[in-house]
Length: 482
Ligand code: BG6
Image (cartoon, rainbow, N blue to C red):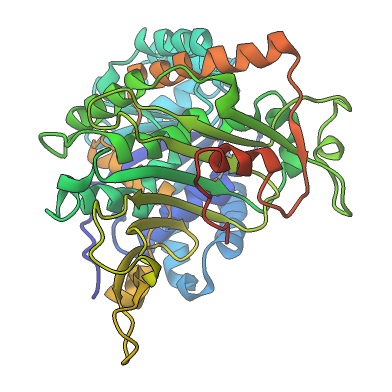
C-alpha cells in the first residue's frame, strides 16, 4: 500500500539556529525527506539564519553532509539532493544584534506561506520576536515554531507565553512536542475514535490500569549541562508522557480539529490529582562498568533524577479507580516506548479455576517496531479439554500495510509540514503547557525542600527496585522492558 503524498503550497521557512544540532540532525534531513517524497514543492525556500559568518554555499555544503549522515541511503539521489540544496539560502544574523535583518526582509516573499523556526534557546525568543516585527519581516499570517523546553516551571512558561503573545496570536504559534508527531501516537486517536470496539470499554469499569513507558538505552551523554538542571520530570514527563496520558485518557473530541482536541487534553491535565510522595519513585543510574550519571554531569553531588516512575490519578467519572502508571528513564535495558492498557478480567468465569484465564491487554508500541498488540484468550487447540490460552493479535504496521508503511515520516518532518499547512492539532497550546507545569511544579519543589535523593539503579536495568514495588503493592506488575 503506497501512502498518498499531498504537496503543500510553496513556502519560505526561516530557521534561526541553522547551524545547531537540531537543524542538522532533524529539521533539514526531515525537510529533505519531504522533498524527496514530492511533498515539499520546488518553489519553496529554506533560509538558514545563525551567527556564523558564511555564505549560502558553505551552509549548503554542511547540509549536504547532514543529509548523507542522517538520511537513509535509499534516499540519497545526487540529482534530488542538488535540487533540494538549490532551495536553501543563508543569512548571518546575531539574534541580539542588528546586522542581517534587512537582508532577511529583502529575501522574504509576501505571496507565499511564511514560517520562522526558533531553534534557539528560549532566552532568545523575545529578541527574535521583537526584531521580526521591528524590521517588518514577519507578515500578519506568518507562523512561528518553538521548541521545548517551553520554560522550566509555571512562571517561566507564563513569561514565555506573554513574550510571544506580545507579537503573535496564539493561532500563529506552533509549540513542538515531537512525541505528538510520532506515527503511533496519532494512531492511538484513530484506534480509539474510528472503531466502535474500544470506546465502550475505555473506562474504569473495564480497564484495570494503564502503563506508559518511555525507556531509553542512552544516558545523558553530552547533554549533561542541560539535563542536570532539568531531570526526567521536566525533560520527559511534563511534556511527552503528559501528552501520551492525555491522548489515552481524554474524552472524544467532537471533531479532529486543533482546539477540539486541545480542549479535551487540557481537561485531562486539569483533572489530575496532585501527586502524593509515596506515588513517586526517582532514580539515578550508578555503578557498574558503565559511566554513572555523576560522571556525565558536572555536579558530583547531583540529585537530579534520570529515571522516574509515577502513579497518577485522573479524577473524573471515566477514570475514577483506574491508575495510570508512568515511567521513563535513561540507560535502561532497552529502548522501548509503549502504552499498555490492561483490561479487567471477565466479571464471572464459566471455566474451571485452573485454566489460566487472563485479562485482555492492548499495547500500543511507539518505538521500536511501531504497532499494536491485543492479547485475547482462546481455547488451547487439542483434545485436552477446555484449557484457555493467552495469544497475541499482533500487528506491526510494516507487516499489515506493506513495507512503505514502515517508512513512516519522522516526527519532525510531519510536524513541519503541519506548520506549513496551518494545522495546529499536533502542537501544544499555551494554556496546556501552563497547566502541565502547574501540576509538575509542586512535585519538583517538594524534592528541593526535602533535599530528596534519587535511588540508585544499575545502568541497563529496569530502574530502581522501588519502581517495581510501586506496582507490586497494588498487586500489579510492569510489562517487561524490551
Ligand atoms: C527529548 C528529550 O525531548 O526527547 C531527550 O529532551 C530524549 O532527553 C528525547 O532523549 C527522546 O526522544 P525520542 O524521540 O528519541 O524518544
